Image (cartoon, rainbow, N blue to C red; front, side, top):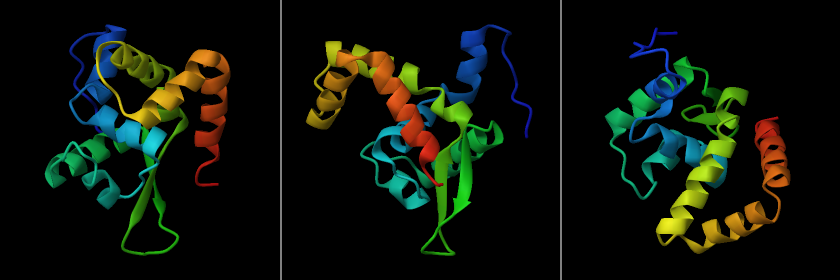
Length: 138
């Protein structure tokens, strides 16, 4: 694993060094909520990530053990990506980001539905979603 250059020992700064760029959380979002798992799936996201940026971010996330590569069951030419436990542990943060965004911005209907479930019982939602993500790829 490449040694990430740390700006400081601050927990926020250290975390942002791994996933705080413009694209990494969107990759994590897709693996968490949209379940898009191949390189091509990430390229289809509405934000329009460039191929060189995507390759770089996937590499950094993998080097930092946030994601892992798996063999694709249907194609030798494709790779599946999935969150590791370390990546799945970002779920509560992603939920809070979504709740904050819902408060200030229009959000898609499917995300509103998910947040309705979150608001009923956030702890239960996170526990259930965590188990679902941990089962992926088994």
